[in-house]
Figure 1 (cartoon, rainbow, N blue to C red):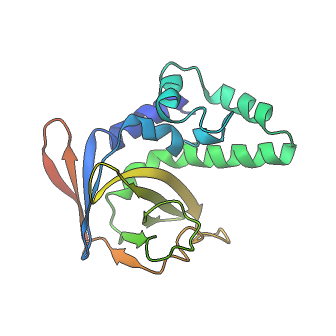
Figure 2 (figure 1 turned 60 degrees about the vertical axis):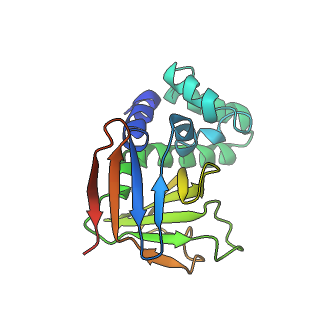
Figure 3 (figure 1 turned 90 degrees about the horizontal axis):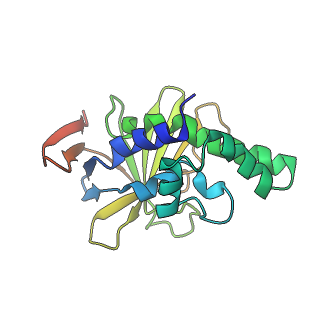
Length: 203
């Protein structure tokens, strides 16, 4: 089993070393991230007090191993009173942690990738502006993108979820998002060297 620190470092390698440019017929989305977004992707918002282990402190706690796989279970049992609530929270967290290693698959694929737009459906409860969806084998990977305050068409990741083809609600994250765009290509840019390469091209 990978440690929380290993999951954090692997996710940082995918999300923070590179910027991604997502091309659709409509626009180009520039996706950029820092490590302070990673604890939320790992499900650390479900530990302890609200947002106690997200953002800067969450990243620090994981890197210094103040929070570990072992302490995740202890914190859930401490802050959630009923056995059923504890079970559900641990299931949510472990589903995120177990599948976060597939995050790199979101950007390169042999199947078609789609981008769903939240703006056109204000009633949706989904908390992102866009949702990138990749169906891969038995799994459906979902990456939520939110607008940055730093500029137009600049986005950050704010969620990563996985459902399974045999789940009853496998399409629950995007079933109410009627505006969908096929992704034409994705370009990855190394932040240090500025080297760019096409890592996904629609057929």
